[in-house]
Length: 237
Image (cartoon, rainbow, N blue to C red; front, side, top):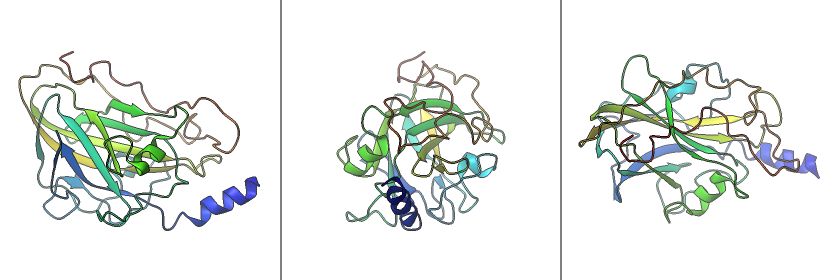
């Protein structure tokens, strides 16, 4: 039975990947950002990163570099919208087998970024990716949302991350889907992002939660990476 599950998960790999298309700011959909002249550093395909030591762990494989940013306010509600092939209503988002957590990191825009975790959706009896596919976060399939910290105005980069664990029972099997979204924060916020983590370097192939067998009985999941910043609620820290 377990072998059958493994085989089905493997068979869906080629057709089941995902990528970020756009964001929604305080309920207002933004134009697609994964295009020339857009606000998302977009890889050339929707394939995952599996080498956790690769520089591609930061913003994915080099492809289309963002040349603009989205205007947001500190404390805004941001929804990230993922799709497999297109933003059409019939798009399958990502394979249902690709369960795992959804994390969001943020950094000041610079040549050497330091990443602070500002949101984490983890296993609570249902996997976050399952909720994403069903539209349980915002009512729209493919979207998950979070509150932007009320940070000092300036240029920032937001890095949403899905860790697909359908092959996470072996070293090097976890699949990372992440992209970098460029935003310009306005407002009167005074919160300063604390020193964050280096990416790559924040996890290894053996980190619990990266190496994790979803096919054996479990009740808790150790979400990898740092804790969520306690100033990430949207209020001034």
